Structures are given as structure tokens and as C-alpha cells.
Amino acid sequence: MGHAPRIGIFDSGIGGLNVAAAIRQALPTERLLYFGDNAHVPYGERTAEEILAFSTAITEALLAKGCEAIVVACNTASSAALGPLRKQFPGVIIVGMDPAVKPAVEHTRTGVVGVLATRATVDGRALADVVERFGQGVKVIQQACPGLAQRIDAGDFEGAKTEEMLRGWIEPMVLKGIDTLVLGCTHYPLVRPLIERIAGPGVRVIEPSEAIARRLKSLLEEHALFSTSGSIPPAGSPPRDPAASQGLLACYTSGDPANFRKVLERLGLEDAPVKQGIWEADGSLKLP
Ligand code: DGL
Image (cartoon, rainbow, N blue to C red; front, side, top):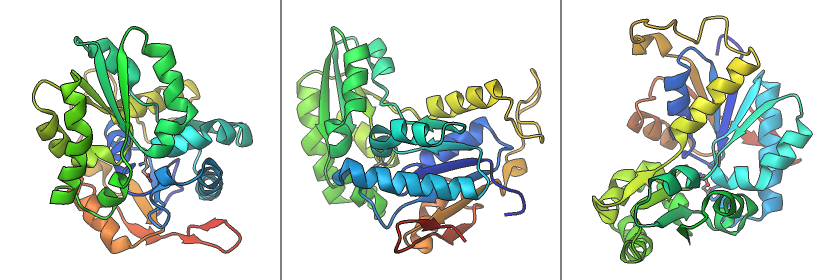
């Protein structure tokens, strides 16, 4: 990449690419560097200590590449590591995923809301906190989905097994009256059409990628960290030429770059170059 990246984004795998796509939409001239830790997916079935160790090493590697802001595009890593990361890197803007319980509670008419997330997120403090803060008077059904992120990361977006797993979790929630379903893992929007088909037209599916992109944008504005190439279009300016944003996202994966490229194509991000990130024996991450 010709210029230093400014925003580092990471996830346990391909899930955070949705967030990267939303950020690219909101900030089309920013230089983004994405790391997918596909070698360690699923984070959702690991301990908080392991997730924190990976998240710390990834953040160090992204900062070493020149990033000035970090987006933890993974609910599981946000839940386990956001607080400690902010303490360890105090001068850095670090944005994390927040399960979208607040908008779901505002939207529900039946008073029953569902959340799909990884085991680690369902067991962690972050989800419990937002449910406590915003879930008053509403029933929030929290469903762990073991194995789902891994299947999605392996590229199974529509297969019979993925559908069967999703039906097993979503259909009982529909029977309990949910009219709103929160995707509390960044991998899950990749199977959103299937989720919507199973949940049916009476259930609105909510995921927070665009809200996270807006939050990042306002933090960059607040800290006067916008790129000099002019990220904020003046009011009334014509829509941007999508070609103008090409080349602003570069990716690393600790897994197989060829598989990673297939997901980029699916998300319309095929112009992004993909390189191999390497975990060293001492637990540090090398992004050559
Ligand atoms: N994409 C991640 C999340 O948002 C986690 C998937 C996993 O590695 O278990 O929670």
C-alpha cells in the first residue's frame, strides 16, 4: 500500500468485513487496513484471556503499520478486550461493537426481542450490561450459536447444515413472540438472507455495522483526524464516484488468502489486496 493506513479493523475472520464495507461507505477516502484472524476462528469458543491476548497483539501490529484508530469489528473481542485495550493504548481511538439491543428495544411492539451471538458474548459482561441498561420492560432472549461463526467463516452461507442450525435457534424465538432480532456477531450478517427467511416477514433483523461506521466518523471528526484528502463531502455535493474509493482497503489474513478473496468478491470489495499475516511463536503478529 502506497500510504500508511489510518484505520485498523480486525475480527476473528471474515465477519468484520461487513463493518469494513460500512466504514468504506461512510468514509470513502480513508485508508483502511483489515486483519482477519481466520487461523484462530472461532473466538466465540475461546477463553477471555486468549481473546484478549490475540486482540492485544493484533492492535499492536495495526498500530505498528501506522493506524491511528482501531475498530474491533468483532462482538466477541469487543466484549472480552475493549476495556483492557483502551487502558493499554490510551491515546488511540478504539471503537468496538455494541450489541444493538437499544434500537431493538425501541423497535419492538411485542416486547420480545431476540439476540443471536457467540457463546463468549452471551456469557460475557458487555451484552448483560446493555440488556440491563436498555432492556427494561422488554424480554430479551439471548441465544448462543456455537459453531455458526466457524461455518460462515468456512464459506457456508446457504448450506443445509447452516440452515438447520439457524432454524433450531430462531424458530423457538419466533414462537415466543420476537418481532426484532439482533445479530450480535459480525459473522451473522453474511447469512442475513437465510436468517430473514427463517424468521419470516414479521421479524425485523438489526445489525450495527452502519451505526459503528457513523460512530467512528464522529470520533474522527471530534479528534480532527480526518484524512487530508477530504473525507467530509460539503453539504449538497453530488454522490461520490465509487471508483474513486478503490484501493483504500487492504487486507491481511492469518488464514488462506484465496478463501479470503472469495468473501471480498461477495461483498463487492474485490479490489482490496490480501496478504498473509503471520503469528510468531512469541505470540506477536507480523504483517509484512
Ligand atoms: N465475528 C465475531 C463476533 O462478532 C466472532 C466469531 C467467532 O470467532 O466466534 O463475535
